[in-house]
Image 1 (cartoon, rainbow, N blue to C red):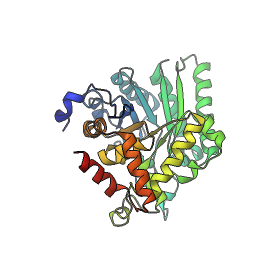
Image 2: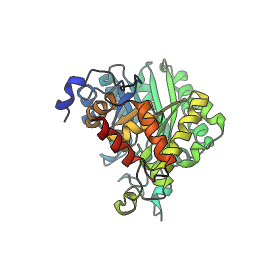
Image 3: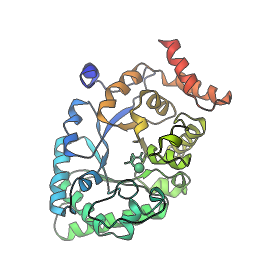
Image 4: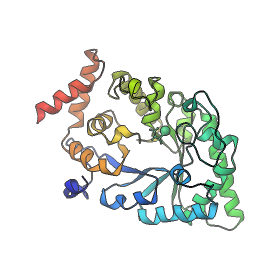
Length: 324
Ligand code: PEP
Ligand code: MG
């Protein structure tokens, strides 16, 4: 699949209307790194650090992690890498951590909630990331932030880690960006000050959709009932885009839907200018994006809403057919 799109690999993704859309890739294992060059990704929009914890049978050490993260940064050759801190719990259970018996793990003690309640691992990870950066730029993102206070507390952990590195005489990053994933509806309605304080946001569409529709992402039976292009969900995403626009907050989208060409052009049409997806999706998404006038598509979406459609998908499909 990567071969087929080789001719546009180095071409920046510009839609037919002239809008520049950034395409990044999702990664998590060392084996993903060669795809950074072969896919034509502009950077790593989501590096799922928990994957390296999940493939082991004991907790990795800080020095070991620092070496891994440095290899990631080296192979990115200056491209931006967004390291997401440990996102465990729910469907991702570490074999060497005592499992929690929770009735609803997806709504349970997971991700940043664990990181803040038991900060040992988060601190170790932040330190490993700071060491790996070796004074160069570093981007870190916290998963599953549901309220402003959690971001602030996580950010405070980062500040403490920075101070510690400074005292120990280690270099601190030349540029440090700290952001959050927006994957619970509550965060979309956080106070304006949150949007001003957070350095960037990335929509975790997989989780956000499951909580928006109250439909388990792992359960095909309920998940398939709710289309990503459902007008309610798109309107919700538009609200997030608008709030970020008001405060100038950098926003991207890194759920699986970013890698589906039809979904991707619709996300771009409603204002998401940065998408992160599995490497194999970059070619197909870029191919369709470059042939799409996002202004026209935006009108199609707006019109479908006025018509009272449940999903804009049929209208978008018709638009693509007419154009072909
Ligand atoms: C998401 O929820 O959309 C996301 C990107 O994170 P994950 O799939 O790892 O939960
Ligand atoms: Mg998620």
